[in-house]
Length: 277
Image 1 (cartoon, rainbow, N blue to C red):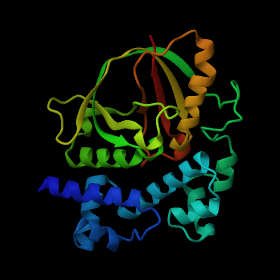
Image 2 (cartoon, helix red, strand yellow):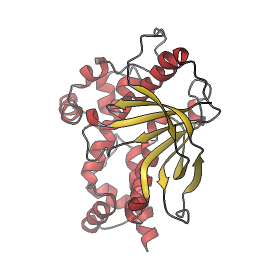
Image 3 (tube, rainbow, N blue to C red):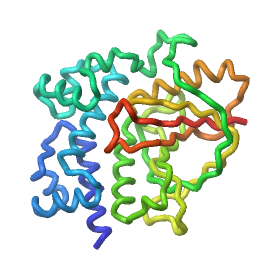
């Protein structure tokens, strides 16, 4: 029975991500979940910790933030693409969530990750240290495609952890990124949304992964997740060439230090970890 409700929540979260401009009313999402409107609202909130309306708003605005800094779409087009046909209502909602207008957010140092005019030294600066990281056992859900859309898999991971009461056994939440966006077509990028697991049996439906640990460069990024792609350019374009270090043959991973459901986007803290030889 629990699995049935989990599947309904996962189906609805995926629907929100895949149809940001569609009808995401409570009635529609209840239909997707195949439950009555009244009972679905309670089930969704009990499992995810958010109302349907809160989840829809957060996911839509996160998609908008990513498009603002990682594409050249006009602001009006982005508003329409996430379900805000009225530009003023989009600007108001975005400003309430991110603390600035969409145009100001795009302009305020959230650099496009593939900007061909960047030169070494021109990337945004973030604190970077080296430290010895422990080996970690991670349970996770796979994601295929654009890294900026891994939020879809994190939503599912969080819902499963909430439903199965796994959070006491998971700390921290971690994202693993197996491919370089510069070398691999975006549709083929492989990543995982999960967390370090302190339990025994791997939760059903999740994969068991290992991060070896060892010497690691750690960039601490503060701000909305939409700026993370540019932070990688700081790590690889500014710090690494001058560091004298050499990357290990292991993928980068991210450690998320606070909860986006409870933290303002500008206060989110993420550690980008680059294993070193």
